[in-house]
Every structure is written in structure tokens, then in C-alpha cells.
Image (cartoon, rainbow, N blue to C red; front, side):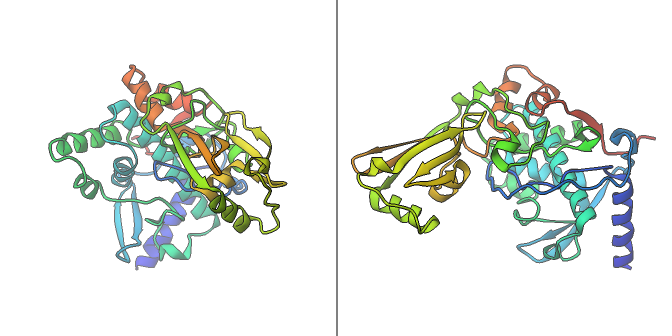
Length: 346
């Protein structure tokens, strides 16, 4: 019986949920990780996503809890609340939390559409979603996240997040009648990045836009130091054929930059590395860095925290603090998108 119900659920979502969608790229929230982008999914149904989204409210999803090995069923909006609580500081203004709720909802709907089109991963153990970041999103129930907050403010934070989710209930973003892949991350370098510059796949709504407010964020600037031998070891591990030159400063060659100001490519020891590759190799907060050498060590001066594509969470908080509403925040970070409703309205 459970298999019959699950099968019926999958068919309903595949027919009614989202007419067309891009296969998701695992994005960044505050604890961001990245995987390469994939190709487009062929549309199953044409039409306006607002009018063809006829899911009943509440919309129930199945979720595999990776840590415990159990599968639970819950309201999709409760799932979204858990993401918001886990990924954005609850002290942020409610309009920022509302923007985060819409972005998280859109992100996960694109994941769902991809799974229904291409098949649900075995790691889900039959559930639609899971709590493994490499497949879905690192998810924790709002009630559990609440336990980590300052007890003096925890109840107020919980209420604010629940209101942010409820006041945007069912809202998600579309572009060209497709659900938008709404990446977000902690802090930009002051200018966001295009999806094409970071992952090689152009998404018209993920353009480089200013986010000057991020310069006020804690941790906006960071430094990472590598002694010469450690620096050489990391490079050699990534490219065994690399030429390790002396003095250390002679290692550095041509550097190119993205539209958002991050390192696109950098030449080291005659080898060309992507900025995102260097970021991963040396554990940098972002690919927006400057590399210099002093006293036989490499020094990375880094700006921002995250991949830089889409909505800066700090920037959203700052915009909300300046009186911007959640729609204005979303339209700033996601170019040309439109709000749609997931649920059927009687």
C-alpha cells in the first residue's frame, strides 16, 4: 500500500507541480558546498507555472532522515521552516527571513522536479527528499534548531520564522515559466557572481549585481597563511607535474577575474587553476581573493563567504534593515524572476 501511495504521489507532482526546470546545482547556504551544474530537463507540460501549480495545501512530502535511518512525512512548509531556521540567523529582520523562505522553497522545488524527472536517488530509500547535503539539503527540525539559540530570545525567533514561512506560504520564484534555481550563501564580496562564471552554466536570472552592504558583515575579510612548504605540498597534490619555482613569488603568473571580481583563473608554477579550485584546495571562504607572498609564506586575502551566486544572506538582512520588503530583496538578487504560487486556490 505504501508503494502505491508513493507512486500516486510522484505522478501527481510530476504532472502538476512544475512545468519545466533546470537540473539543480548544489548551492550554498551559510554552510555551502558545490557540485557542477547539469543540463536542462525537458518540459513535461507547457503553460503558466502559476496556473498549473495545483498542489493541495498542505502539501505532504516524505523525508529520509539520514542520521537515524527513518522516513517521516511532513507538511512541506514545516520542512521549509526548518531550512530557514538552520540557514539564516534568526536575529535577521523578518523581511529577510521571508526572502530566505521563498528562496529555500524555490530551491527545493527545483530539486523535487529534478528527482521526479530523472529518478529519486537510492540514498533516499524511497523518500522524496533526504537530509544528506550531497543530495538535498542539510535539514533540522525547527524545534531542534531552537535548542541551540539563546534561551532569552528562542521563542521570539521561532515565532518570527514561523510567521515568515506562513506569510509567504507556497510562494516560489519562476523565470520563463520554469522554477528558478535560487542559490544563496552567507556574504558576497560586494558584488555577486554569475552562475556561468562559477559553474560554467549560464542562468539568466543569476547575474552579477551589487551588494555593497556586505562590507559591514563580520568576517567580510579574512586571511589564510600557508608556509612555503605547505603551499608547495598542496599544489603538488593537485598537480603532480607542477614546477615548484624559487623564490616563492616567482610561482605567480597571470590572473584573470570574473564579472563579480573573483579569481576566474590563476597561473601558479606554469599551471592554470580555476579560482574555485584554489578556494577548495586551500580552504578559502570564497574565490574572491588576492594572493601575495611575504617572508617565505603565501598569504591569501579573501573577501566574502560563499560561492557568491544569487542572494547574499547578509545583504538580504541589510536590505530588510533599510526598509526593503522581501519581494524587493528577491527581485534584486534574482534578475527578471516572478513570484508564483504552489498551491491551488479554491
